[in-house]
Length: 449
Image (cartoon, rainbow, N blue to C red; front, side, top):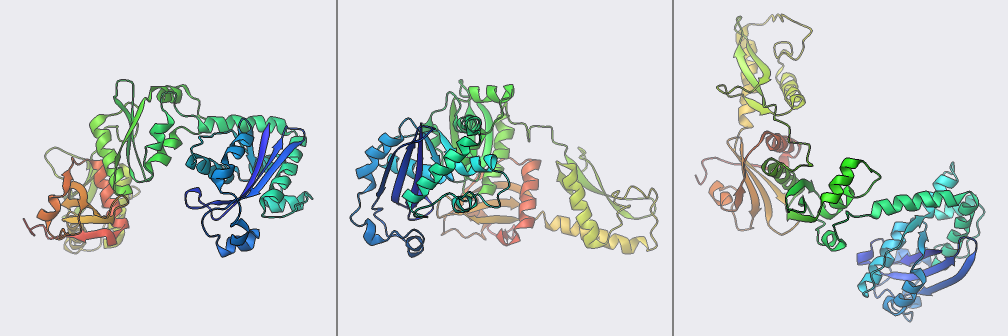
């Protein structure tokens, strides 16, 4: 039992736009059982370009019923049927949202004739409804009107069924069901409570222990992504069964969420987190003088009694940075142990001249250990997101009200939460500062001290 649906709307997002027309074709898998269509007053003006595309004007919908007036009948027609549409998530999201707004909680299994057509009829240049109808000689009486497009989609659906579509439909429905499933102990209300803004989220088990920590630009979308897909491995299924509660912490930016995630993984050591739990390699770039008097930079494991010029937790990051110094200051790659093909490098210039360039590279490293703040626009409030690095060490992060002087370290610190530093976040901050120098505010470490 299918409901083949098409709608016209005032725009592309359900929360900010209304439905101007809906058509529903009822189909039993063999033939059409019935039709329903109506214009709807969206209670918002129809943009001129939409009116030009659909032919539906503000005057046409002025006397049409409101969605709430036809919602009960729409729900009755859709209830218990598989929802079918071309680019199904668009139509489904609008109808589900507007039904929710009038107090009707509706869910349905979905089929997308666009995706089904790609499978049933490979080789067409385009799979939009208009293109398919032209390629397959499907008549459309009223393109970009709900009734005409719904009838055309119904004919397309019948062509798919004739092409052995029963098997394809079962496969698509199975996949759709797996993508919508939530962990057995997590209700929809927990998902709805999650924000669409940056943050760190926590999965808790039956004893309320945190078993996984993650970060996201949009917490709700990222959490939902954990529950989609076709991974039926024993480990993943065990993971899903253990989740009983989801909590989160808001963060003003994606960077602060990434930093907090790293801190929380080190603090909580969650069972299902793999990254950042390995022992840190704690590599460093060191300087030493060889027997000929040449200053040499080298990557080595960190030593207890010797402070490196710069530390890393990933060897590739250390190599990348040292190569950057070699290119920028004209250093010898073999003397820096980056070119292993030359076992005993010979330089024609005097040590003093070469060493001056090495010192310039060291000075650059030291300058990067300065005191600065990363300032970004917050995505959760009007305050400014601030990350403070003092003398090369991460201090903490927080939100600065507009009245705070960002050049005064003592003023900044009053609004920060102090966090422990680790090699992962040090490299994260250093990389971010290199990538977005306009967001870095250099500070005088003595100001306000």
